Image (cartoon, rainbow, N blue to C red):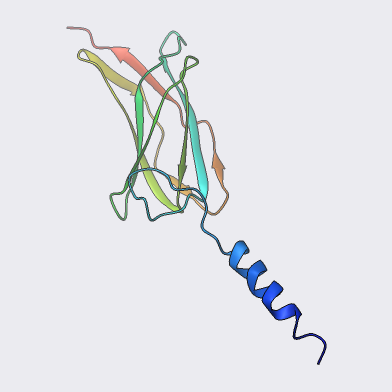
Length: 122
């Protein structure tokens, strides 16, 4: 049968197609399959750079982090699942607005997961 020489090539193709994606976050055995993104800013719409945003898988507790850029933006690649988001606060700060839990499915992009941070009045 002439199709037998194609089997090694087919096996290689299947092997490459099933190769796991990039390793992210706190769980080095999980491959990323979706993205959570947003902006951290003040109530005056001033971007807050250098803050850690953490996505916590509500089922497993796995944590994935990103640091906000100069525009306050962050992007976190995560495996499928439901996530709760937290932002790093400094003393005297509180969160005035934060995203609700978000469900990520394969290849999802869940944008506009924004935080607004304010200074607490004493």
